[in-house]
Structures are given as structure tokens and as C-alpha cells.
Image 1 (cartoon, one colour):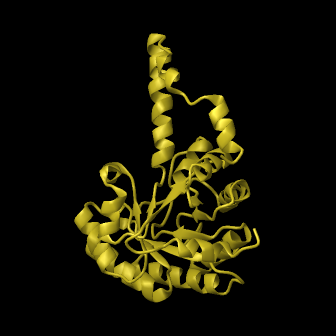
Image 2: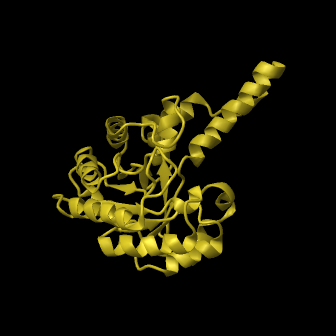
Length: 272
């Protein structure tokens, strides 16, 4: 891809006009989503882990995540961003190296969270900010644009409250992050506080109760992008589980009636 994919990805981030960042789990799902109109694709650490038969959170190595990301980059013409958990290491230099390797893999950006995986504890605030500062310095030293998303995941995991998340976001912004993200902030009012607290683009996760929120509502709150996380992958798994129960418990194959025709899949995989 000769164009600056990082710059193209950055241009999608507009406060109050959020684009949908579609998280895929393999080359096929990435191609389908791009053919359906996704302007950008992201990996999902959870969805990727599921494809390997593993649970979420710290179960995939950096090498595995990079190879997986490269397969998505090669599959689609749109920018691809990596969900790279805690950067695959605790120290700032490891996170910086992850940024460099992600760029070499062809990614347009990555997100880095502040949980000390595989533990469910958060890094101290000062260390979390130092890690983002190192990642930002590595990103700015690249020969092309690269979008660094700093995540405050402690609210989702119960490690700290929203006030602490806002303090961390302020530190991440000062450290050079390009986009901020608090997964599962609890309420739309909380998301509005997050968006109002910064001049940077804010990512909102469309999962759980937030799947009932329209794009226009997210826009009115000031969000700049809407990621799906593992929600689409889990919706697919819901179909497998429901069909599996129907087949193996009751000998009922009717859930398969609603499957998409093979020729339609072929058309989308061929580029729409």
C-alpha cells in the first residue's frame, strides 16, 4: 500500500462524527467487513484468542499477534489497527518496541491498555503514563504516521473509578497519545464526561448495553470512533452455540436455514 495508511486512518477520527472500526478475527471476516463498507479494520485480542481456542486477556504472544495482524493487513485495502493489550510487556521500552514492530507489520496504529496482564491489576498511574510516553515517542520516530490509542481499562475491570480514569487520560494526552479510550465506562453520562475532558478523539466500545445506542447518539456525545471489540465475534459464536444446542440436544437443524448463501459470501470475498 503506497499511501500513508496512518494518515488515512488518522483522518477518519473526527469528534462528533464517529466512524465504525470493525474488529475482525481472521482474513475472511476482515474481507467481508471491508466489502460491506468498513472504512477501517481492527484486530480484537479476545476474538483472536478465541480462534486459537484460548480465553481472553494475556493469552496471545506478541509474535502471534503480529502474524495475525499481518494476515488482516494483507487481506484488505483499508487501514488496520491492532488491539495489542498491554503492549506485551510491563516496561516502557517493551511497549515502544511493540509500536515499532506493529508499524513494520503494516498496521496503521495500535491501542495500549494499562492493565498488568495477565493479572487483573492496573499499573500505577505514573508507570501507565510513562509507558504511553515511550509508545508515543516510538510512534513519532517512525517514517510514517501512526495512530496511538491509550486505554484506561481499570474501570472495566473494577481496578479504579472514572475519576482515576480521567486523571490517567489527561496524563496520556500530555504524554503524546493520539486517541483515548475507556472501555465500558458505565453510562452514557460517563462517556460524555470522557469526551468533554479532552481535545483528543475518543473511542467508544459498542458492546453490552451500548449496543442499544445509535451512532447519532454517540456522535452527539462527542465520540470520534466506535469499535466493536469482540462483540461481533461473540455474536457469531452465539449463533454457533444456539445452533449447536438445537442440533445436538433436539436434532433440530432449522437455525441453519438462516445462513447466508455461499455465492453471496463468495461475492463479498471477491471484493463486493
